[in-house]
Length: 119
Image (cartoon, rainbow, N blue to C red; front, side, top):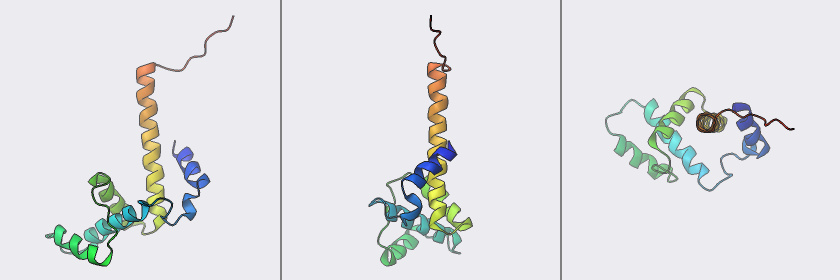
């Protein structure tokens, strides 16, 4: 599934888009950077104040569109690999995980695929 997700991102030109392939994409990237910068900082006591100050400099924040755990994971990924490609790989991995979960659930519900015998 991960290989299929990477192929889909590659074929769609995701590696060349610089996070501008969709109108919401830059906002999600900036929000992930906000979380990364907050986690890398020394003062964790006032996250709301940090967010307000960050917004003054980078007003393209999309907190609330995705579940907050996504931004936490993306922020952690950006701590390890501070490139836009890291977010693309994360998206491909999440897409692969979702595809795998759908496949496993469908297989449990419908049973294994079997070819019918032809007379």
